[in-house]
Amino acid sequence: MKFLKTQRSLVLLVLVAGLVAGVLFGRGFQAVKAASGAAPDATPLQIPDPVQLSNSFTKLAKELEPSVVQVTSTIEQKTVQYRGRRRQGQGPDAQGPEDFFRRFFGEDPFGGDTPQRPFRQQGTGSGFVVDKNGYILTNNHVVDGATRVQVKLHDDPTEYTAKVIGTDPELDLAVLKIDTKRNLLAVQIGNSDGVQVGDWAVAIGSPFGLEATVTAGIISATGRDLPSREHQLQRFLQTDAAINPGNSGGPLVNIRGQVVGVNTMIATSSGGSMGVGFALPINMAVNAYNQIIKTGKVSRGAIGILFQRENNPALLKAYKADQGVFVQSVTPGTPAAKAGIRDGDIITQFNGKPVKDGEQLVNMVSNTPVGTKVPVAVFRDGKNLDMTLEVVDRSKMLSADNRGGGAQSGDENEEGQKVKLGISVRSLTGQERESMNLQNKGGVAVTDVDSGSFADDLGVRDGDILVAINREPVNSVDDVRKAAATLKPGEAVAVKVLRNAGQGDNANWQALFLAGTMPQQ
Image (cartoon, rainbow, N blue to C red; front, side, top):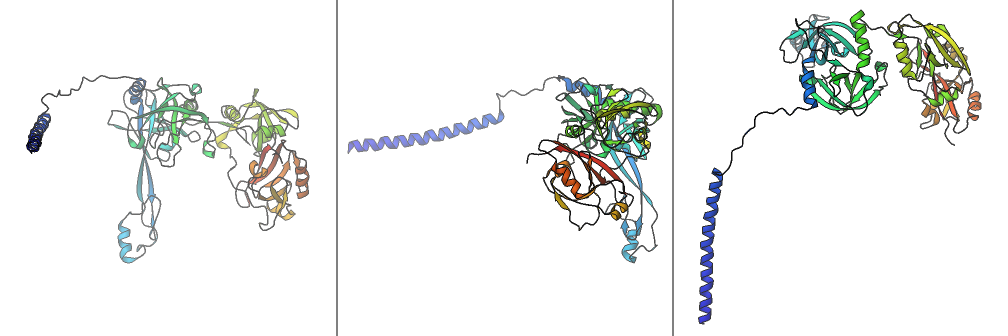
């Protein structure tokens, strides 16, 4: 019993001691918290003196920002209200006096058109100074159609009214001039021929109107070809440096601060940068600029042929040629036609120099002064022929539209006969040939092209007129069968088709040469 009483006393003592310790610990903890809130032993933070951690991009920005400008274009249009319908330039929420009357009196109470009133629209872009006397290079689409162009320099609140000295729509370039009564700092021009994939690239401009914005990336590709009629003469530098709306016309510079391109456009599905921007190489821009400041315009040579820029080895092989540019069609009355060049010829030399591909030929022809007579060598039916032609002004030559769809070849409901190439064809009647102005051109109508077939891979379309296979003319379905039967797997095959580039009775038929390698069967 005594032992039990002693044990109970010890337990009670332990419990009391625990309670006392808990109270003391709790009070001590509260005291620590209170002390930490005042932080008597904490050292205040200090901001060091500013130190400029200069790097290459910092240096580029400082050097180039004074030379990069913001361009604001004002386009003034006229709008007309007619019987309750808004014309171009008016938004859906626009209201005017005539809207008030119309709500009460119905249709236009004055009858006819209401007086025209101006509608102003502004857009911003970029540009860069290339001459101390105030000459600026930018994109043509930045100032196209503008009734007023204003330029703002970096760290200068003044908006200078600019004069458009000249434009080059084909390269999307424009030259502006401002008068600041002082010398400006011009950029340093580089050589875009030396640009390589992986080089640093810095873009400077006014995206979304945000002046002097600098972005950096690399050159993603050179000589980028965008397959559209608007960019026939352009071969772009591609970059992942962020380029957005408003960057147009600004400089793309290398790590040395030299301008190697003119920022022109972006590929985007969101309206903003997705890392795919395009700049016109500065070498092309300089050539256009030099012509504009001399004559106010750009003059380029042309000879009147249509061809593919990239060589088709199978097409050249089918025509027994090693190199050169295959002539798809020749425009009547042009220098090429007068010299004797025909569809299917292969141009191997121009002005005494070998021709490797279409891009090289474009540069040779466009850079040749208008009026110059040059020798041209062509390869035809296994023979080399020498000709002479005179280069004419490209702007004065009407080029054929090669983007039209296939034209109808007669009765749409008449089914063609299937042949080996993966197409259905039928013969044309004399009346059809006369109505389509194909009396002396031969050929059969393509009524259907099997998806995934050899003909589909070549690019043959419904509505084309098939006129030749491997240079052998076809005028009937049997001709097509005989020609197709001779084709062997692995053999280069070339077909010639006529495709209607326009619509209606006056549409022009255009010859296209399509080629590929016959697949294994």
